[in-house]
Image (cartoon, rainbow, N blue to C red; front, top):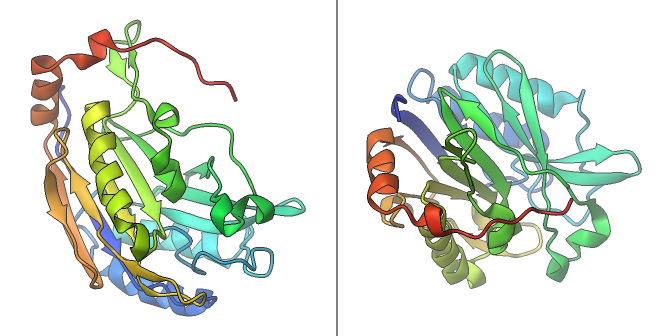
Amino acid sequence: MSLPPLRVSLVQGDTRWHDPAANRAYYGARIAALKGQGDLIVLPETFLSGFTNEALVNAETMDGEGLRWLRAAAADAGAVVTGSLVVRHGDTCVNRLVWMRPDGSHALYDKRHLFRMAGEHERYGSGRERLVVELNGWRICPQVCYDLRFPVWLRNRYDRAAGRFDYDLLIFVANWPSPRRHAWRTLLRARAIENLAYCAGVNRVGTDGNALAYAGDSAVLDFLGQPLVDLGAQEQVVTVTLDPAALAAHRQRFPAWMDADDFQLDP
């Protein structure tokens, strides 16, 4: 795998409730401090509003202030910036991850699995297509929060015709409450191990407007599920460098992909 190392920055922040302007200032300062230091900056899920029940009231539009701010932040940092936003989509909303490149182009992923225990399926539309993007030759699959619980959707298949895996790095942006932190930590490690890939998860901290507490626990795991960095519950920004040679060596040394089941996902 003749790829360069990939520098990934995690921004574990305390999102301000229903206050996009305050969140733009808050996360903007943290992004600005990373200028020139990395290739990819990852923010939490719904980082401009918090995970809100009042979806339509707090929704962004694709030509609104949130997207303009994100475009400017990526350009200034000289890195891809990603996280999810509540976005108006026709008469409903989607929990939309935006993959914003420094040149102003972007890719989109709408959260596939909606957290019905909080009624998300009643307020948001569901995505249908998985996103895989490339950054400096790395193939990256960004996902949103509850998607973490669905391993079939996330399975990293090997394309024999193309001679490559679906992805090298799996990313989750989240608002994952403290009572379920054991599941968050366990499933991040499982997804890394079973998919022979690096795995990064960025969660928020603090307490939201629904009185839900968040313990952070953002992490970057290697392909063995071992933490390269494992954050606690404090506001923190950290940058990790991923080694492509170590990933390639593990896939060659432990070729579990050769014994994997073939399947296709229905839309």
